[in-house]
Every structure is written in structure tokens, then in C-alpha cells.
Length: 566
Image 1 (cartoon, helix red, strand yellow):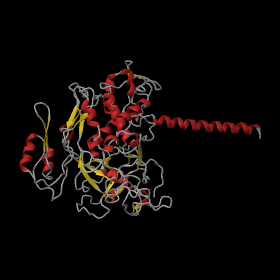
Image 2 (cartoon, rainbow, N blue to C red):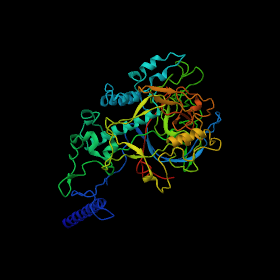
Image 3 (cartoon, rainbow, N blue to C red):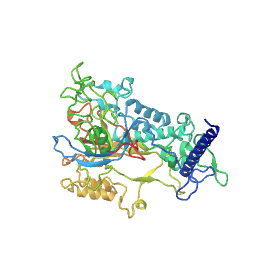
Image 4 (cartoon, one colour):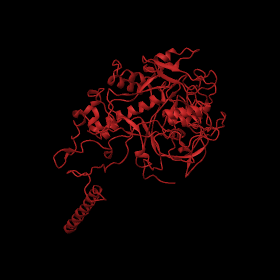
């Protein structure tokens, strides 16, 4: 090739690379330049800091992604119970994450171990914290059954490590989700360099714990203000920034950093039912080709595939006296609960969404689903709170001396606010005045009841409750005539239990009953239908109700932003 041509070619290549580099530089520069002011974002000299490189919400431990969409929530089988409490409604669910399996005994034991280390039950001030978190192992007892082996071993024996935890009330499940949120947030901030590595073991005690909400609102209050933990590695690997006076700034993670994971929680009933159905296999263009009876396709509980033809697809009660089937011949492999992942997952990759154990969901139970008012992320049970504020404007942190306990209807005591957490109080007129979307803290009874259930059962007692300030309970009891048991303490501090002996009660529904979904090892096939819904008191537990956690999705609806649309 002619030398002149070679030189010209080289010049053209250099020019092309230069243009590409300049284009990339402009693109990178424009991404860190504010479209509002033109000022630099994330400038080393200080100013506005924001994670402009955030791509995708990281999937937290134990979860799988569930892409949201529209579906028909409610009854798909004959209403043999004749209660008409799952009338079909059209709902839309936002994308979210859900536990791949039910919370297992080993997962819950990790929670108990942490509580026992941080709040030793040998200390009288903390004894109720540990005891309030313990599952009720006595749920296995039966007056005419020999079940002591489960009472003594099911929770702790390694043989049951990967079996779903039971004996856990709805309240205990919520507290587990809160604890899990803080532990996962703590680990994420350690990995990002904002907290000292290993501090969750070496530096934690009853006066020095980590709470995600506390870190967001008052980071120096976490770990009891231990600077070695909260500042020890915060500047390593990142550009240190100072203000005009030379004081370090931007050394704590904020929501804008994207480093703080979202919270674990119980799924709503709508989310749980949508996730259990796994409707993707019925999708054809922009329509569903049919309705599903189970989390798997087909009308039967046995597999039709040649490899495992005849095998049961879930763990449930086959009939009277038949909890597993004939030994050694195509039974469901379990008589009580079974190890998680023993059966095939549904199309979302979720295991045991039918059978094994039924599962708590977040909702307060009501027979009517009010889709006329809302058909987007439907949920009944909102009680809005805010951070308690001290006189000096700082958030009020719970200490070891003012732990908040609740005495449940069965007399059991549980801790609802642990040391290191921010005390929560109901929202008031400062948040509700002239709002159109909510007007009070407790929204449980909003648009509640139908004509048959709206009769005023106890006008005299309701007046008394209104005078004592229990307005929410009074409003509920105008529609649902449920028993009202009493728990008080005598002068010596002993619990006095008084049963409601009224023979005219007509309902078990109140503001303390929660929905649970899915069939269990103890239920007939009818209850495997994801649309079925039942309720149970939130402070009581059974040997057939467990739970799994969920987490909200932020950002795009789909993980594949460029997927082909039908």
C-alpha cells in the first residue's frame, strides 16, 4: 500500500477515535451535569450528591422477582362455603419481590439467636423481648393425638431445619420482617464501606444496634454513636469531601445513594394471590387464555408428566385420615409439613404457594373487596405513623429504659419498639388537614361493610368506647359483633383474663384478625386454590400457618427494559 495512503488511513482512525472519545466524554459529563441548574452533580468540591450510575434494584437475600400486571382476583371454584367473601375483582399489582420459599425454622432461629445475644433474657429488663419472639411450640399438641415429638423438636432439631416455621403469630411475623430488614441493610452498608466490617458481631449490644430508619434519619445515633463503626471505613475507597469550614460531608449513605435496601414486609393479599397464580403460562398476546385453579397449570393435583406421572404437586390432606397417601406409593411425601423446595415451583419460581403451610398476609380481613374505590395495589390495613420528635427537633430514639411492649389478647407480651429504633406515633392534623387521599391515621375501616353487616350491634358499648378514646374499635363494632375479651393486671402486676361470656355474639371479625392464604398440610384440596381466603386472630398461632416475606420494587416495572412487546 502507498505510504501516503497508510498515513491518511492512520489519521482517519485517530480522528474517529478522538470523536468517539469526545462524544463519550460529553455523554459522561452531561450525565453529571444538572439539567435544572447546569451545576455539576457529585462534584469533588461538594454540592449535590446523587447516584447517577444506578442501574437496577439489587435482589435482596432469599427473594425472587415478580413482574406486576393485571389479573382477576377472587373466586374460581364453586362457593361451597356460601360465604361469598372472594368475589372476583379486576386488580393491578406493581412489580415486587417475594421469598422463594416460606421462612424456615433455621431462618427464624437466626433471628432468635440475634435477640438472645443482643438482649439476653437473663436480664430482667429484656426477658420479655426474647420470650415474645419465641414461636408457640405447643400448637402441635392435640387432646387425642401423640405429637410431643414435634412440640419438643420441630423448631430446633436439624432434621427440621429447612421446614417452614409454624407457631408464629402475625405480629411475630411482622417483627421478624422488621428485624430482617435491619440486618440486610446493615450488611449492605458494610459492603459499601459505610459501616465497619463485622460490626454486626463485634460491636453490637443492647445499647448499640443498627436500625435502617434510624440510620437514614440520624446516622450518628446508630450503634450508640460509636464513631469507629459508623465512620471507620466510610471514607476508604471514596473521595473525601469537606465543606467551606473543612468539616467532612457526605460520609453517610442517604436514600439518594441507592446503597440502602428496601424493607422486607409481609405481602399484601393481592400480591400473594397474584404471585401464587403465576399466570405467565396462560398469557397470549395481551390476553389471558383462561383461569387457573392452582399455582400450576391443569385441573388436577397430580403430575401428568411421564417422568413423575401421578406424583402429587403439593403437600395437603388427601382425605379423612389421609395426610400423605399410601406409604411408598405415589403419596405427597409428607404427613406434617415438608422440607421447602420438595415440590416444583410455579412460573415465578416460588415454592409451596399451595400446601405445606398456609401463610399470613398483611391485610386485615373483611368479606368485601372494595375494588370500586381502588383497583391498584389493593390493601386494607393502613395505619399511618410518623417519627416522634424531641423538643430540640431530633428524632426520638428508643432506649433500653423505654422499650415499648404490647400485651396481647392472650396475655402474651411482645416488644414493638426495640432500643435504637425511632419511636413511631400516629399522624395528626399536620399531615391530614385538607388532604383528599387520607384524613386520619387509622384507615382500616374506610368504606367498610355491606348492607347486611352494617347494622349497629352495640350502640351503648360503642358510646362507651368513644368516650374512652377507642374510636376505631367502636366503628368496627358497629358492623361486626365480635367477642370482646379483657386482659388486665391486678395490684401485684399479675395478668387477669376475663372471657366474653355474651351468648349473642354473631361474628369473629374485628380489627385484629388477619388474612391467611393457601392450603396447608392439614387442609383439603379445596383450600389449595390461591383465591381462597380465611382469617385468624393476629396475636394467635397454629401448627399450619407460616409466612414468607416480600419487598417492594423501585424503578422500572420490568427487569428487561427492552423486551419485545406484543
